[in-house]
Amino acid sequence: MKKALTHLKKSDPVLAGIIERAGAYKIHYREPGFETLVRSITSQQLNGTAAATIFARLQAAAKAEPLTPESILRLRPARMRALGLSGQKMKYIRELARMTRDGEVNFEHCNSLENDAVIEHLTRVKGVGVWTVHMFLMFALRRHDVLPTGDFGIRMAMKKAYGLEDLPKPVEMEKIAAPWRPYSSVACWYLWRSLDVKKKPVASSQ
Image 1 (cartoon, rainbow, N blue to C red):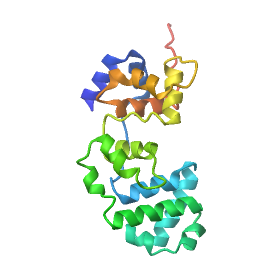
Image 2 (image 1 turned 30 degrees about the vertical axis):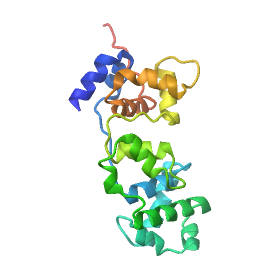
Image 3 (image 1 turned 45 degrees about the vertical axis):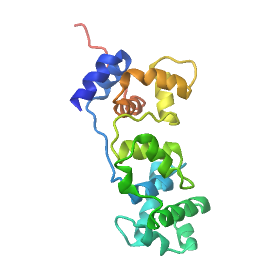
């Protein structure tokens, strides 16, 4: 990761300042499998606490850790709804389970695919969009060069850091991110952190 940070600092002075303020790179990864994508679907449009609570209920009801397609499909739809899942999310998760069980979705195969091919492979599942796959690429498959142009946090961080008048569109984001390659994922992690990290106080000149 030292190589990535050196590259980003040299290629983008704005990002260099963010890295300096945010400190060490401490990304948390998940396993690149079925459970991680179920967790992502569960989390859509929910805050972290609510999503974690519902997912924990789902794990407990399925009696499987990690979750498997078979453990999900053994649950009745009404039971899944009672856990707090919306009707849509319940259907999405069950469809993902069926497609994984039947071999239409192959998570092991994803390891050998290029990013665009992973997006094409997983977005065939209803309820799994490009943003969800971008997160899967970054936090499960550990791909270092992903730019999630649909992520509101990244757009907000770019607007703030680069002094933009409006939230950037994908084309503008790609232009800003061009110097980051092949470490766009690392840069994005720091942009997310920049929304939480306060500026360091100016040292006293005593």
